[in-house]
Structures are given as structure tokens and as C-alpha cells.
Image 1 (cartoon, rainbow, N blue to C red):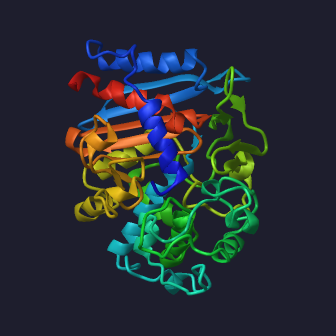
Image 2 (image 1 turned 180 degrees about the vertical axis):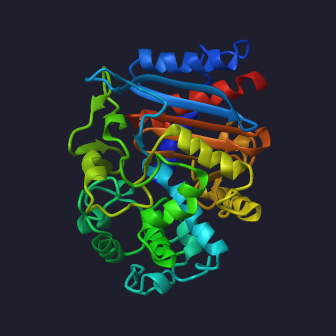
Length: 403
């Protein structure tokens, strides 16, 4: 295992993700999924969710359940807006790939071609070359502060994950990130990291506009994703975030720290309203479940009008190898999300080539091209909706009829 993230994911997939006992193959798909959602709400593991399932391009299940704001009794709706956290990585990666297809950016370009001042060094003081490919595949030698102890280098440098520190500029965060030694030589292994935040700045510079404008021009506008971007389109529809807790999830405050081994994650939900905050390519987008399903369906069906079929094939192909264990054993990594290489090793009912990722505010999605299946499950509960029992029970309920 190369990271605590992977360890937690394995624990989730092995210990917290059995086939939901109330969802059986004899039930219809809607009944199986309703059972999973109803149980998670009844057990107060999640506050609210929107789940969409599409097969062959047709939505075969849709449900909004629970509360978008529990204290205000505001019900979850299909058009609820969510802080997407790491779901942002895939559309930002798609924007980078679109620029590559336009020959405005190169996979093997050194990052210093676009950000001359970004020159992190190895512990021995040498300065390696970091490429756009390595940013896309999380093989650039970077990491996240939640994957190191509380007194680790990222904490000491106050590097922002894109989830915290409202008002921080991109220039300052890149300065901080570049001041910290790399955790390994670029290209030598896989490590979940701040790579997509750096990629976002590369995309901005190669695209000739701020990252939000480039992503809008290349991805969201062509696909008609009018609800998705780096700002909140309608604050009244934004889901209130909660964190796992007993006897029920806890409403996040202005700053909310969630411990994990070896450190923890700090959330500042109000960051999204601070226009001074840098647009985080790795964690800064906001959108709806419907928009995200439309984006994933575009990838599943060949990428038009955003990417060519050949580029989407590269994006959804394992670029690193199963040793990445990006979501546990059997998982590699493509350009912007995990790729299932060995379903048996992963103990997953999904097909080889399944493309999948998740977000810290409580989200999980996957595309199974062989089954022509796309599933989006957004919640407002950290971390249950991300890697707890809920997303894996949703997955198992979808596949239950095929067992």
C-alpha cells in the first residue's frame, strides 16, 4: 500500500462494504436501491443523498432522499448543489486533455514550461523534472497533508488542500507547495496528491484564462452543465455539509477537523463563497448529481463534444499499473480517476476497466463501460458517503441481479 488513503479504502471495501442484506437479487433495482438508502437514513449514517443510475444512456433509477439541511428541515432534491471536493479532479483532467488535443499543451511538457517558479526538490536537494502526465496520473512526487502526521512538512508549510484556508491565493499556495521536499522521485510510484491543483494552474496558463473560465469553455458549456463550476449558482440549493458522528452526523462549522491516521482533514465549508480563494482543480468545484451524470455519460459514450474517443480511451485506461492500489488492491489509475484492473483482487462485482472516484464531502461515482452503466451517489455526509458502507452497498445493489 502506498498511502493511508488506500489503506482506508481497503478497509472500507473489505470491512464496511458487504452486500446489503436488505437488498436481494429477487428485488427490482429500485427496491434494492431504496432499501440501501432507507437503511442508511434510518441508521443515521447519512443526512441526505441524491442517487442516479443510468444504463445505455437511460436513467433507470433516480432518487433524492433525506435532508439537504437537517436543522432547517430542507429536503434533499435532485437539483441540490454539492461541494464536489475531489470529484473536481476528473473534469479538470478532461480540460487538460482537451488542451492536449488542441496542441496547446503536451503530456510530456515539464511543469516549469507553464509555471517557471514551481520547482520542488527531492530531499537530497536535486530538482527533478515534473511532467503534465505525472500530474494527471498522480505520480509527480507530491502528497496531501492528511496523508502525513500533524507535524509533517505540508502542515509546517501550511499547504492548503483546496478544502480549507479561505482567501488563500494560488500563487501563495504553489509557493508553499514548492517549498516542501517531494515525497518520492516523479514517475517512480503513485501517490494521491495535490497534483490536480498544480494541473489546474497549468490548464489556466495553457488555456489563456483563469481555471474556471477554461473548464467552462472546454467542458461544462459544451456539455450543457449549467449548474457546475467553481462558484455556487444558488446558495439556497447548496447542501449543508455534515461529518460522521454518533448518534448522528455532526453539522460542520466554520472550520471542521476530522482526525484520521496519521493526521486528519480540515474543512472550511465557507471557502466556496470567498472569491479570493484559489480555484482548486483538485477540490474546488460545485455542481449537481444530474450534471455530473451527464459529464460521465459523455465520457462513457466517447467524449464528444469535449474529447475524442481515442483520448477518452487513454483517460479511462490504467496508466500506472495495479501497484498503484488507488482504491485498494486491484486498482490502477488513469487520467483523473481510478481504473479497475483486477475485480477478483478488488473483491468487486464491477467489470475490468471500470472508471471510478470519490469526494471527501461524501460522494462516489463509477462508470462500468462493459455494462454500459453509470452510477452517481452524492451525499452531504463526510466520510460515510465517500468510503463508508453506503457507496459500496449502492454498488452491490446495482449488480445484485447479475450474481
